[in-house]
Image 1 (cartoon, each protein chain N blue to C red):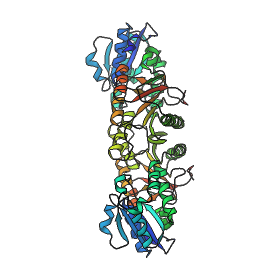
Image 2: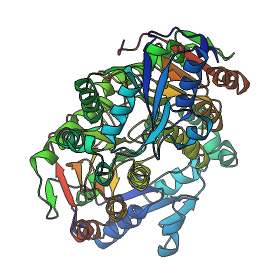
Image 3: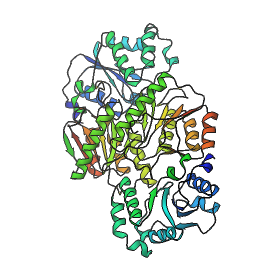
Image 4: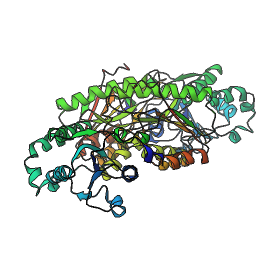
Length: 294
Length: 294
């Protein structure tokens, strides 16, 4: 994992608010390997899987509602920069907000945040943290190797037909982005097979597999390109699209040919394993610019 | 079923190439009730469900590949206008194209048609039929009551927030339509929950139910508007979007609030039952214009 050698921007402790997913553990491993002090507030019910592997008083688990205790924890560890990382599968429910004095005084702000849409929720959480004197940064600011820059992996040839699909897919994502949707789609021969909505990329890939099984798609595998970008106007500190080995495994199962991601805007978990699978499955992975989002 | 009283445009026999779905049986019932002569070529594996209910030498089932026999059948029944109606779940495979002499002479045209995308396939089938001296018309030309015109069913109030979602949804569909995708989407509070791809409207609605079950959507039911239109540039003779009682049942199960369709461009199967369910489930159904497609 080359992220261990990533340039770390600060020698002050970095605070991590940890949701679910392997990438949280990877960041912690990378920071530890680089000797970068850090403190981790692991959200119960989200980051549980990483806790058994981590020890020490710089790692602690919290309920969603314990805002006061979380902020005190980061202050005790002298964190100034915070990274919000990992999947949050559920919004906090109001019951979990009771009982923490530090939360109670912030309830008006929290209620206002929870009333908004998803993007506004994150924006308001950031505002709340910054009003407390923290600076919210992205994982790319503390471990830039987690982002994919321009690259081309795998042996599959990028034919003119694939190149045309990529151009059309980028144009569609740009149009969708104007409406705050569409981080990803699947295209083949100019036809859009799927557009990502609230279900996420994995579920969209699973849909392609189902369409093939039902013979709603009769093109032979390996066809179909997955194109993935950051949303226009998205706050890249807290909401970068991500891929990992599971993405590649599911793509291969769905009979897709390759993956095009926006360079510098997509996180890759378990980079070495992800790239190994791209080659092993005979797919391609392009990371490039020329997205209208750039 | 009021379609029985629909104006029928011709006293010559109408030929029907029948795929799957209840609407085929309904059209046949409406034509029979109106004393309109007709002949039905039921495609094996697609229209099987309607065959046991129908008798007579004006109804016959054919394999996809029996183009020559299908055309002779329509000529024998003196059909000049043909309606292509019903769901086609599978493209014909090449094996089914052997054995019919009338098909063999048309193989170059058929191969060309099958090489194209879905829209081009239909267009080329129409070209092939018209080159044989038939005129391809839409169901709306022979039974206009199958289309929904401007209407508002159900008791749910159209709030300003719902009105704003409808406006945004129409704008998104217009943008998607420029790329030949997006007949339907689901929106709530300005956020697009789902965009229809190759999976069809039913599968998209099922996705909303799954998102609620997994708490990826935590808005209480009844929220979320389904908006459905014809694709821009779509040939409305052969590819109109359709709704029916099952659409409403699935929407209710998914916790959706209502359905907005493009007036004059969406087929409704079992109209009376569909509208009854809209009221029974506490939903609304709006059929209106102001789509950018108009």
